[in-house]
Image 1 (cartoon, rainbow, N blue to C red):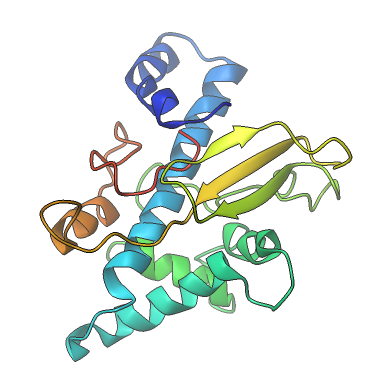
Image 2 (image 1 turned 180 degrees about the horizontal axis):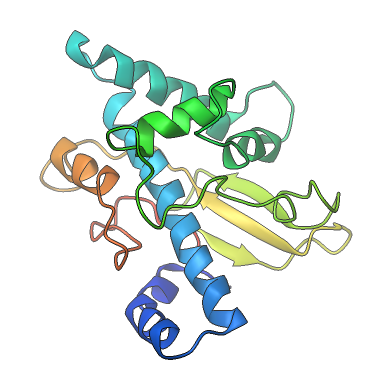
Length: 206
């Protein structure tokens, strides 16, 4: 299994190597780290705001519940991976894109993209658009807090399986995580931090 939380622990070493000398492998890993961070922050946003009862945060609640639909499937009996691709391929700078505007609500600060953030989050090859059937096979699991990259199914055309953790949110409290912890992670744009310190916030592919 590749791309677990243990891989993210090597991020500082990879960043240092990037400064000293660039390589294809380093670029791939840093891209994977950032993609995983952004997915994790989307999930944290859903968990923080989807059940919010304070009407002052109604806009965040609406965004969170719309985002949730991409992780549980937009259409009945359709692969959830198809829904995820719409979100991951969206451009927040496109005012006509529903998914893009959802991402903008999560990530943009003062209408500006944070430095180092990737949009669209996955390119057309990764999404199997430019080369249909290849790229990543996206799957969402409700049974884990850590994602991974895995071998594809034997008869599947995709090159790798991209596992996204979307477990039930723990009961908020001191024993697990609280609203403030979620908010801090959502707002974290530190280019040297790719996963939340709290293990109850899902870590995707790093």
